[in-house]
Amino acid sequence: VQMVNLLRGGRPVQMSKRAGEFVTLREVMEEVGPDITKFVFLTRRSDAHLDFDIETVKKESAENPVFYVQYAHARINSIFQKASQDELLACQNPELDTLKEEEELSLIKKILFYPLMFEGAVREMEPHRVTFYLQELAKEFHSFYTVHRVLGNDLPLTGARLALCRATMEVLKEGLSILGVTAPERM
Image (cartoon, one colour):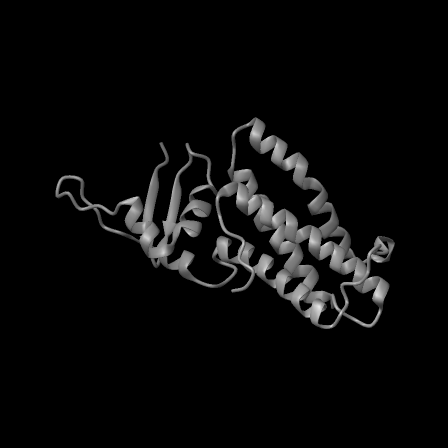
């Protein structure tokens, strides 16, 4: 049984068992959406306490873990849409050895950790590991994207960065799918 404090703007939502005043999970899902509800509930172990702030999870910002992860996926998708318009997707064999920057290598390491993390999450029956991993992967991607231009004039580097983006997008999509959360193409 998971104990949940329902908050609105940091303040507890008043409920009373005696008076029959309570908020159902269905009502929460109707207000914030099923993706947010699933993801947030899965960020904690089922035996751990959870503070669920309705206002925080409605924000389209890094404070909202679901938005942050889904936005990374949508952002990568928009990179590929732009690349297809600019005809930059022709690189069949990207030169991955051109990826040498700290943010690129950090993102590669995070992607490579996915199978090990997932195996542990399954073995220990701890889905919160997947939510934390996806948040970390999204953070690594946003850091990379902030510092480095993906689509540029250096075609070998562009091809390698597109391959890195593709791998990131696939892991985000698979991880979200495992949690039963959508991976939107745009936001």
